[in-house]
Length: 401
Figure 1: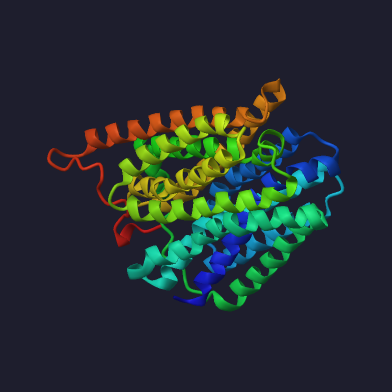
Figure 2 (figure 1 turned 90 degrees about the vertical axis):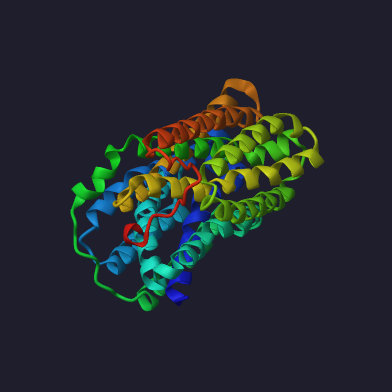
């Protein structure tokens, strides 16, 4: 596997750590910036909103630009936003830096995926994408807990500076190791937009949005739940987040193996399990041992569906999956925006730190509903004798994003 694919994985790790680590910094940020915990939670929503806007817009804007040049430009934008966040004197500047860094994420993921597949070859495209997006899983397993640990011992700005340093190293890696290859002939935006005429694409995007909202509605407020409800000391929070990350890693492995052969059943079981686990967390959060067990299962359920969510959109988009795949990243982050906002609203209403868990459970039930609609629409669209809801999720090589 070309070293450039691993460089892209490092970049995804940096971006993923920046996106998720705020959940572990909530108490420190709230104290230092003199704002409430729900207000700090909006930093997650603000970042997600930046991805929603930046992904499709920058993808369309860079279709004619050489992909290596685009990746370098997007990484420079990310480093700028991350540096602003590390230097931020107040909440407003920190939010601005977060949004600027987020603008690069959606387009980088879309363009980086194409570059990884191109470098690895069609025979190893799945392996290349798995290596690249393993950066997100590693971000949850190591990046978020490490950021929390640094924040508790050296201040939250140290967490930002470390990620910023790694992002600069990733930028140098892209400059020196990603070859400059010519893009495919430009086919125009209209061909990419045509995929959105298919209503099944929109239902698939809605499923991504609702399930991510369910995850981040609860995940964004795990730190205060651990300390104020379960009674764990602050020093235990990084270890509990590692446990969640390990669950995410296991879920990604299981989900990746199931998505190709059992796409829709993978979604039904995974989303249903997540709704059940989130509902149980409102009860188990009052017992330390039960909390530990529930958080691990939550991580497995939350990330077991991600490969199927991405594969579903790629399959429904047909011959033009590039913009649709980027838009799915935006759909994920619409959910990342709605989820923390709903969870924070429930806390602000005086419902306590367990409220985001049952709110997330309701969102997961809604996501299970849209996944079911996807199955119904797929069966209706399939010709007689070919109604196989478990058909291969990956498009043919000619359709690869």
